[in-house]
Length: 476
Ligand code: ARG
Image 1 (cartoon, rainbow, N blue to C red):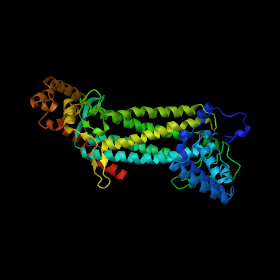
Image 2 (image 1 turned 90 degrees about the vertical axis):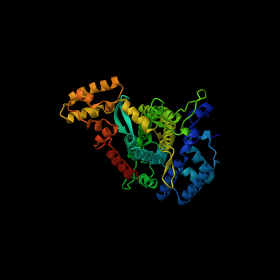
Image 3 (image 1 turned 60 degrees about the horizontal axis):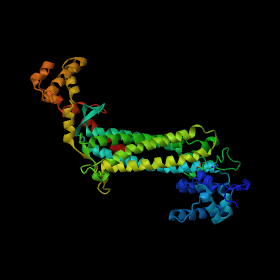
Image 4 (image 1 turned 120 degrees about the horizontal axis):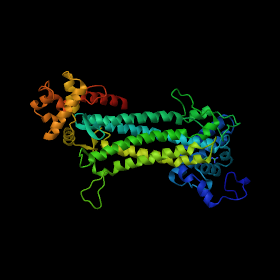
């Protein structure tokens, strides 16, 4: 009894273990919609080229409509025996419409079919990810705007360095996510190209109109010109587009992970800079006082998982000779999981950081609670304005290196009296440089330090506000 599409040649059936080992239907059924969309575009072109008749085309359309509703309602019976999503759908089509169903695969192979499906599916997911990246950036810009004047210590080496605006700090992440969005848009251009017509590996003898299929599927460039893979061997075998996507996703997760690390630190009692809403934290089963930042911790952890998928995919590719090899079936689970993880993480971050958005009013509720006093006192404790004192002396004529040395002595004195630089009396400060006058206290304050960095890309509130306006215009 035949159970596979090719079985006339085979003298023995597959064992159950081999069937289970080689089948992909339980994960690749997720591609069903792309599979049907691709098949319909192929059938339309076959009819237009008179390779199949108009009646067969109509039957294929009718059958696919029924299959769509069966899958959507859950009535469709996925069969392991039929190996993958492509053979399951084709078998059902033939069951429903007879010979027309058998004609669908004319001039096509599962090799160009699966490459097309993955590209169509991924293109749709990239579009969703682009929207999520926009939402997250908007949430961060909103928080930045509310906190332009809030000052926290900026760190290098995790040691207090110089005061920065909390808004400026949030906008640093907006820059990262903006580049992630650019990368996604760039990957999309290479995802959005048509393999169909490559057939198994060498092209086909049927007069297919590949450009017509590409146009039908929206695989077109910015000028509306069809994008068709130009070499049949390459079209069916490379998965570089999936690797690129996973690399872009990994970078995005790395940005999320860095932010997670900061949120976790800032929530620690030793910082106390922020609190996140209770619903993003969990308690401890033994320690009643605990509120643990599980969501950012998991995001940091899931970053490892996505980076692992990148390693998996790139390793999957490296030893494959041209053209298609079954190895490529292994591209799907890592790719699917990368998409799922990234989308969930972007969603949860936008809400955890920015709060819930009331779509009617645009107002946000929830999100992180910022604690300005804790941030400012941490900045004061770390002598964050020491550079400003040195700059002050330079403006009074001292060479920078000498000023640097003089301020080191001043900081030492402040530490020994357990006070901030701004609390040292003028007579004491004058010991380090006689040119110091009363106006030194303007630069020794956190706010004075912040305002002084009024340069493009700097942390002065005027600059931060200009950046916020730029992002708002860009994000719409
Ligand atoms: N399930 C296969 C995959 O994911 C489809 C292509 C199979 N082609 C083949 N010649 N066995 O790659």
